Amino acid sequence: MTQRTGAAALARRVATGATAVLAAGTLLTGCTGKDGESAAPSPSPDPKTTLLAAVPDEKDPAFRFTGIDATGTVTGAVDPAGKGWELVQKDAKAGFTTTTSRRVIDQRFWMKVDFSDAGELSDLLKLPEGWMEFDQSKLEEPEVYQGADVGNTAVIIRAADAVRQQADGSYTGTVDLTGGPEVADAVDGVDVAVLADTAKAIPFTAVIGPDGNLASLTLDIPAAGQQKALEYVVKYHDFGTVPGIAAPTGADVEAAPASAYELLNG
Image (tube, rainbow, N blue to C red):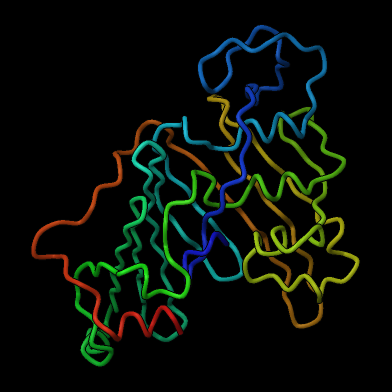
C-alpha cells in the first residue's frame, strides 16, 4: 500500500469532509452522517460523493486498518486526534518471519524489527531489539503523519467512473489507474504499464459500514505479463474502540544506529 511508509508503504491523505450515509441502502433523507450532524435531504445522492464522504478524516476517532496488496498484509491503527499511526508487517518469504513495527506521531518516527527464529540477524545487522527512534533529516523518505486515510482510498475513489450503489448497499465501479502518478502510486506493487489499456477500467467494490465510515475498498487487479492477479484491499474498522497512539518510552527506546538508516534508505 502506499503513502510512503518505507518497505510497507501505507498513507496518503486526500479525503473530503461531506456527510456520509448508512450502508444499509438508505438515502440521505434526514439520516445522521458520520460526524453526528443531520444530513440535508436528497432524493438521489451521488454514489461517488457518498463514498468520498465516508473516507476517514481528521474528525474521526482512532480506528484500526488492514491492507492487502502485492507486498503482503499490513495491519495497524490510526489516531487522527493525536496525529499518529502504527503499522505492523510480517514477511515469511525468507524462511523465517520478520515482523516490522512502525510508529509515527506527527513528525517523530520509531521502528522495531523482530526476526522470529533468527535472532542472530539482529546482531548481524547491528539492530537493537527494542524501538529505534530516527532523525527524520537523515531519511531519504521521512516517515511523518500525513492524514487518516492511510490506504489511499480517496485517491482511488477520485479516479473512479461509473460508480453505482447495489441492492445490497455496496458500491461498484471502475478505477482508471492511468489517471496520474498519484493514482498509480496508490496501489503499491502493481505495474500499471504492464496492465496496458486494462488499467483504465479496474473493477472495484466498496462498502460503507453502519457507522457511516468506509469499511472496505477492494480493487480486482487482473493478471498481466509476469504479474499475477491480485486484490488490493483496504479495511477500516473499530472506530472509537482503539486507544490513542503513544510514543514508546523507557529503556525499550534508543536512537537508531547507522545500520538502521542504511536499511531504510536502501
